[in-house]
Length: 338
Image (cartoon, rainbow, N blue to C red; front, side, top):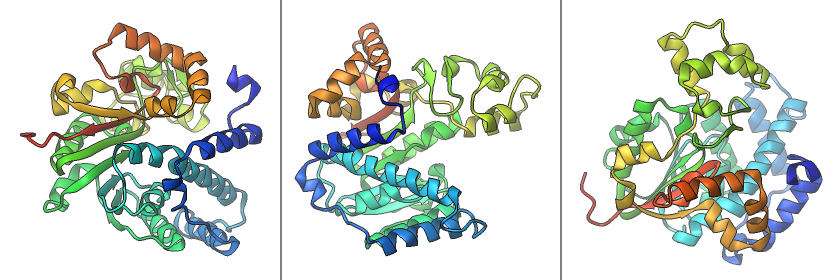
């Protein structure tokens, strides 16, 4: 119903969402927001053109303009949803945070402007360069490393953190990489530290809104899913895979990199029984408690009703594992033994 009345991406919906979230964001968070001049906003566009497009596009080109708008929306989402949620569990000021999958640095800035001490990693040098410039433009600092999530426990072997964040990255790993990254990074947390996953599509949900834009796609075996990809409404995805493609190990890896979703099963395999994990919060639960409007929309939406159905089937599993996207915070116990 909401999508019919207010289509995703429409200016009316964006204004409504901005009003709603801004009226519910704690002052302790908003007072730290850094505002940019038009000159600095233009500098961010120049950084995008230089670092992402290797200067092949002008800062005022449609491609750079579109990317700038998308990053601005992403930054707003971090500020008014993710940051208040994290802050509700533990104040961010002074926390040593390892951010895995920093991308263009919108989330890095959102964390750093709240006083967090951020170490950020990503696999693409261009993204890291843009993230570094973004932080400098906002006047905040962070340490950046080019590395894989499975390498952090080796390359950052002597480091420990108060919080570790996986930002929309677990779904792009293979099964083996995912388990390794979860186990190793959990071990790098200080006792009582917070291990968080943000924005990872949930394979238990009926619709893949991340990669294929198809119903029930996450539920298909990888080989069947890859061959069925030609039915996707996403041209670049449909053209890359399909029924004529041979399911080789190389193709299987490429397919996994596009994103296949994650569920609570990996967490249980990597860290032990869910009953013993201290899952302290999920984003959807936080937002429902923050305002009645979100609660009403969530409860009446198709996604909300499906999540509620799943919770009724497995009431012993934390409700956050049944949302369309996994946004979960787990606290490491002081007496945790690997």
